[in-house]
Image (cartoon, rainbow, N blue to C red):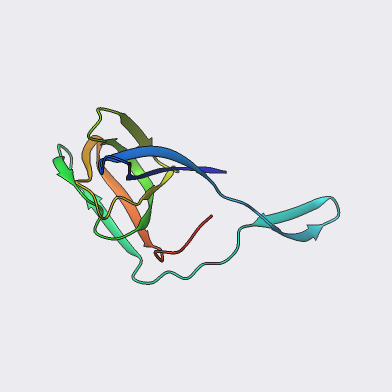
Length: 125
């Protein structure tokens, strides 16, 4: 599984990249069927939010390093170099541009329901 990540680039501006999530653990649930899972990682202060229809935020950094799970609607995220990506229901991205000018956020098909999952600064996938 891959996550889209935005984090500071060499010039300090946010950039998109892909992060591979590994699934090293397997559990057989019935013959020929197993559940694969990632390693467990700590997270606190999980939060639901609703981004209003018509939201169009200028550049801003993520408030903390966090996974963002889109539950409903569609959100458009942009970086200072002009790249844009859209994420819809069921998609996950990693907001990791805490120490940069940040990214733009715009609701495309709103309101957009999201789940924020804060992760540790040293968490790798």
